[in-house]
Image (cartoon, rainbow, N blue to C red; front, side, top):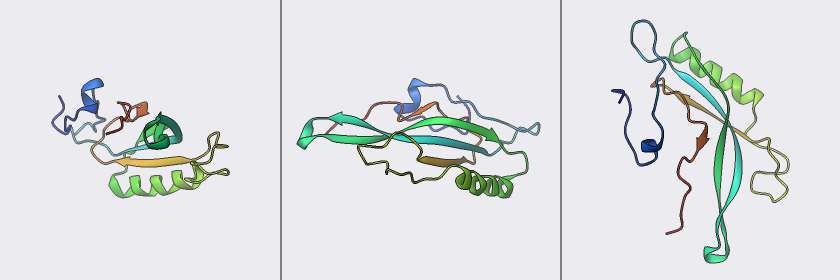
Length: 119
C-alpha cells in the first residue's frame, strides 16, 4: 500500500494508485465526476443516494496553486447544477462535482464504491 493512502472499508475493494513527480512527491490530481441519484431502498417511504461517475481526471505538474486554478476552470466548464435539478425525477445528467486530490490519488471510476445501506 502507498504511504499516502488511508485504508478504509471502501478502499479495500480497489487498489489505490498515486501519481508522482520524478522527485517522488505526489502530483495534485483534478477529478471531474458527473452526479446522479440511485434508489437506496424502501425504508421509511424510500430513500435515494448520490453517486458519482468519473468523467475525466488529470495530474497537474505546476504545483498546488496551479491545481486550484485548474479546479476553478473545470468548475466553470462542468457546472454543479443542472436543469432539472439533481434531486428531480426528471434529472438525466448534467450536474458535476470537481475534486482536488492533493495527495496525487488517481480517482476511482465510481463513488461510492460500496452501495450505502439503511441503518
